[in-house]
Length: 181
Image (tube, rainbow, N blue to C red; front, side):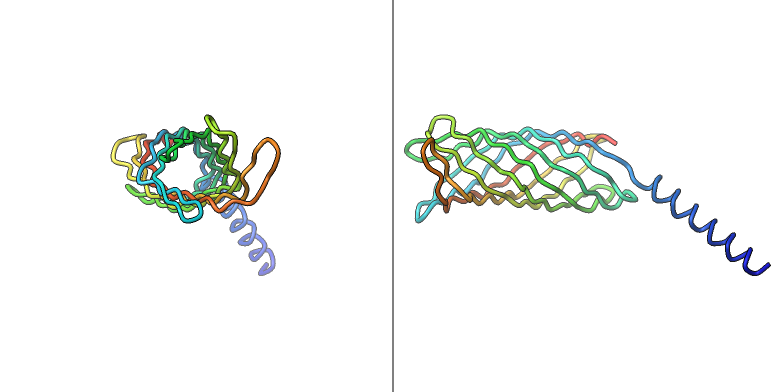
């Protein structure tokens, strides 16, 4: 009798845990559009301003409505304000995780791929970036986000050679997103 009661309680607990874990996870898709400002592009001893426009998508899972994790991909148009004004088509792909409170979200991310393809210059930049962000959800389905994006180039690539690079760019990205449950 005691053994049966223990097995019954264990079965009920297992069902409860499985049901809670399945129903507690929700998938989300969050498209966003933004602009980058206060950019600081550095290479060697020179420091210049940079600007960006971004179109991206975050997708993943929300756990108990308090935390989330997923993928983050974006396409950007980036420009560095130098004498040659180089422009780049930029693509990023990474992971993101954070906390989701009633009106505020905060996250960190790591872009495993952050590539800058030269538009009006004969070189590309390949590297990785990290980000920290915060979002305010004041209206239903609309969120205002502020991210600090830190890019470090691993390589500069031309048509004939690939070499290491010391190029870095740190920017603030202001975006509007549409988090869909």
